[in-house]
Length: 149
Image 1: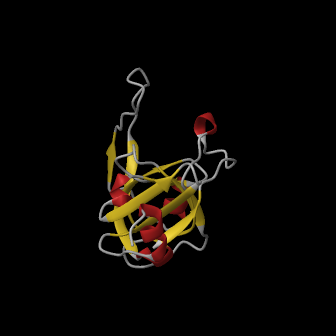
Image 2: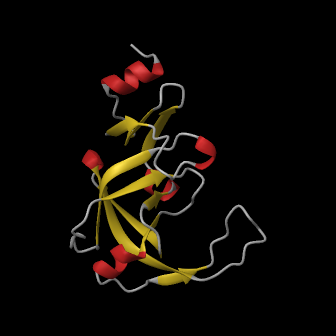
């Protein structure tokens, strides 16, 4: 279970809306070789696939598994092939999540719905609070957040 405050000043916030920013993210290859740095990322529930900085993939010595032409919200934007890499993402006590991710030049991760699969995401914009946990786990925070007793 991981949780935190919504960020309003991280630069990842579009239109000054709060973003779910996660810190302490570890990325490793499928054999467990971990990138030496910890990363931050933004949870993007509109993204099908997670995106990681290309420097992580290069630092782990990964070769692209495939290439795809993802489309975004702008159908007029030019499409280009983006390499895909298999990695494991570790965040807090949630354990490893094996993902096929896009590797692009950027400074943080974008955690998509593939990362959230099998999880519960709670966001309270009014209180600027978020929490991600695995299905079937109810914490005191979740119980209070949902108004359950």
